[in-house]
Length: 145
Image (cartoon, rainbow, N blue to C red; front, side, top):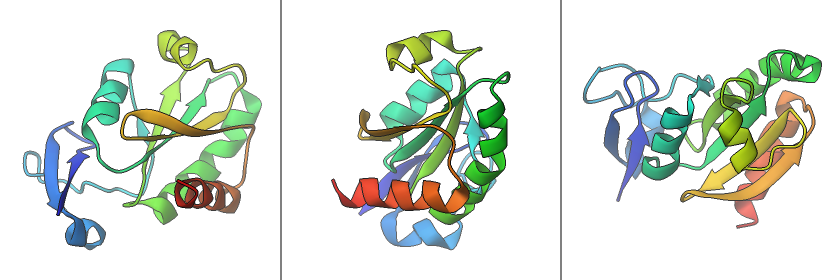
C-alpha cells in the first residue's frame, strides 16, 4: 500500500510505500527529505494542497506573530514534529497573513491546534501546550478515531 505525501520543499505529491515512511524517503522531484522533523509554514494555497493531497493526518498550529503564548509554544511544536513525523505532517498557519483560513475554520483563540484527516477536521485544542502534551494529545486523538 502507498500513501501520498506532499513535499515540504517543492510541494510535489509523492507516492511512498507505507513500509518506507519511517526510512527517510526523499522527494522524487527535488530529492530533499519528505520529513524534516519540523513544522511547515503554509499559505492558504499550500494548506489546500496538503489538505487535499496528503494522506498522513495534518496537525495544524493556527497562530499569530503578536501572540505571546504562540511564541512560547513554537519550540515545543517543533519538538513535537520530531516525535510525530512521519505519522503526522505538522503545519503552521499564520492567521494574520491567512485571515480567510482562520475565519473558515472558526479560529476564535490562538494558538489553536487542529487535526485534519482525509480533508476533514477531527479534533481541536485551544491554548499553548508543551511538546509532550502536544504529542500525547495528537496520538490520543488519532487513536480515538
